[in-house]
Amino acid sequence: MLLKNLKFIRIGLRWNSSGVQSARAKSRASPLTGHYVGFGLLAVTMTGLVYNDDMRQRTVETFLIAERVGVVAIATARCFAMYLKTLNREYATKEDYYEALSKTHKQAAETTLQALRKNGGIYIKLGQHVSAMSYLLPPEWTNTMVPLQSECPESSLEEIKEMFEHDMDVSLDEYFLDFEPKPIGVASLAQVHIATLRENGQKVAVKLQHPSLERFVPLDVELTAMVFNAMKKVFPEYPLTWLSDELRQSIFVELDFRNEAENAKITADYFKDYKSLTALRIPNVHAAKRRILIMEYVSGTRLDDLDYLDKHDISRSDVSSCLSHIFNNMIFQAGFVHCDPHHGNLAIRALPKKKNGHNFEIILYDHGLYRRIPSQMKVDYARFWLAMIEKKPDEMQKYGKRFSKIEDESLFPVLAAALTGRDFEHALSGNIATPRSQKEIEVMKRALTDEGVLLDLMALLASVPRIVLLILKTNDLTRHLDEALQNPLGLERTFFIMATYCARAVYADDTARLHEKWSIFSVHRLVGSITALWNLYSRIFLLTFYDVVFYLRELL
Image 1 (cartoon, helix red, strand yellow):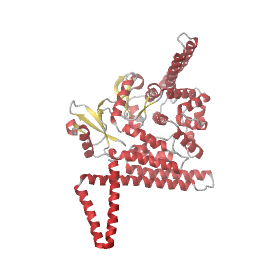
Image 2: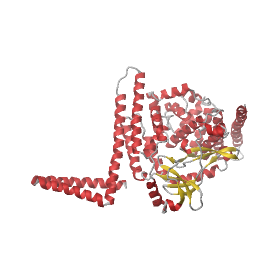
Image 3: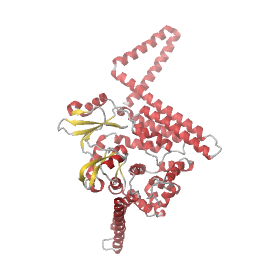
């Protein structure tokens, strides 16, 4: 449709150009004739708009496209002007520079926020992504984008009905016994309604893509790429094209809900054997089309609703442990990772009686974005974390560089800080099991205003594989969830759970290498197998020991 619109624009331009030339030629002979021609052209155009539905639709869409392009262009130009003015000015002190840059960050972020709100759709998605990157971007940007987590435009019921009938070949009234017109949740790409199936009376959640995305996503993806490419030309020291690259790679996958249905099934099948560790519940899928997903309705409350947890006697430390098992299993064992675990995609609900050892279930929604981690990357990442926990800086750097594919050693401190969510001192020393102090948080915020650190950060983000960026995002989101739970047992147990999964990944890799290199009767293979087994079970024993200590501490 967009290509048709662009063709329509080109034809219109050529037609108008020839028409104007003709009118000018005739106006030299007779001014009155020129007026007749002009009025005639206007009359023909208006008649076409009134009686030709296709022409009218294309004209409307052309104006909408022009409006969206204008919003992006104006916001981009304003932000460029702000930063050029600030960066080209001279300052008496470094503090004056930091203050001016902070104000510019805030002004540019607010300008961008208004543009994202105006255009909606994937621009909201982009803003949400920025708001979640507190570990990487200045707080003036991330804090300004936070409202987009809950401010998503709602599609009308008429639009939803039309799309449903088009995609399902049946009306809403024929398919459902009842359908709640008000959505229970609205996100950047879709909204969810509660309904009851006519065929069996089952209560379901119906996820419906915003119909307008069909028209504008291809254009918006290209516009986003153009903006970030322009930014790279104006500010080559701050490359952000990786953001548009990731959007281009992931958005069309997310917009096909059949992928989400398949991911949900794979994840549910995998975790059915780990429910005693995870308490994980994934709603079953009833039907899936490209823009429509119908699932069983499983309600829940936000994971960080501490009053709800206390009211239902749900242990915060137990919830924290289950979260650790879910995402560490995904990363280090399954290698198939949910890449958007924010507050809106996770919920908890109390159970009337214990099931699989827990009096609650953790519900995981929105399975549209998953990534598979390459085996060697998974092992290198596991070795990095073991070196971090065991405070072995040389091995930390070795495996961190291998995992992230960075060659510049000067970028490693930034990588370690981004992976751990800690300042340079804690990240490089491996002292990460203690909670972050307010002083450390302030140090990290100030570091993002340092031009040298910011340049290193931009260079890191531009150089690492896209899967590493998604792991960074998942790390940060799960870390924030864990902090929001205010786990009384602290971070130590979370890290020991992760260490166990890392140890298993390393053990599997060590064993595979021994089997590949040595025969079954080799002494080297025997000694290597014993060493690998010892390393694995010593860490598991340590976790078991700490489990007992933490359990006793919680009782006291």
